[in-house]
Image (tube, rainbow, N blue to C red; front, side, top):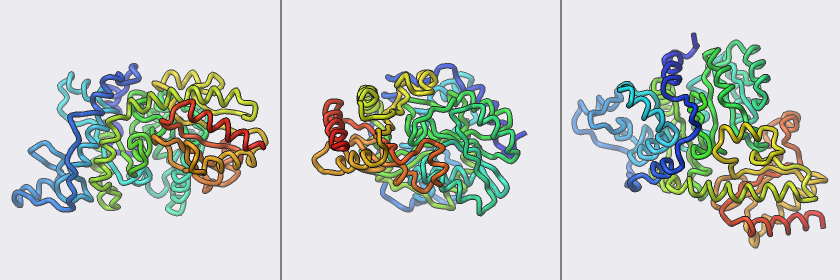
Length: 433
């Protein structure tokens, strides 16, 4: 029996409705849901009036006879109609198959829900606080630097995190065996920044056997390229700031998970901590979501070709990209991802010095790329994980994960292959001049 009261009933419903052999929503259906029937109004209000005292009381109990999210019309820290629209679309993109299966079975009880937060880290923090308590353990893969430092900070509250290479299923199994108080298994796939791919289906079985919630950060893949609920995930997180927004104009995150967990455990944390998105940010992310599928196809086309050219370049020591046959989890990526994504990591021969020159070249305003730490934008970004996004990770751990001083992370945008390659080739020449 799980230490989480909601888990056992969710597991039954997950195996009945969520897990499937079909790995993706069809591309056409995905695009249709994402476009929707038009963007909502921007409801730029903090406070909503009630029809009467009974209506207000019911909303605070989470009841609504009119079908809308009850908390979306109380106070915007609890929810907002514009954000509600975004939550519904994101929910459908990840879980349309679940909705269809439940309706076909005449299931009347809600199974799953979504909640948009003010940032990806807000989503991660709320989920973690809803799952752990003093004495809990977390099994974590190689993750984004702020996620890593957040997990480490929990030790002062008596929560211990064990970092393991989740691309090796055996290591996950061993970590679970020696962690009797594990309250969460958490991973990114592909991970940040080395793009290792974890076997979500296999790890879900290991977590289920011990009744431990399995959380997947799907930011790099997006729901277009990978749908973790179909593979056995219990909770899915994304930073919407990245590919969903697609233009670096907003910061937000989303949690999608079991209905009882979301309502009874996650929402109280969200309500009391206040990581609430503004209505305008939710509108911007709803707008970006409409073009996610077409942007991802173009970005994946470019990244596929650019990764191949990088791998063949005489100045490049190694390239990490799931679409390359040389990637250690290439076959796994083909099974569980629609395409390989838009992120590339690479290391230059001679390490940091030429890498620094290359990145400084892209800091100039005449190049079709920016030296910046975000990703998933129409704009291509290049950055240095060891001194930037992952600088808070202890050096020994960084090196063990392959985050060396010479590692460069490239988020491919929409500038086009030939434009980007011409600039990269020029930058590589200057790096060794």
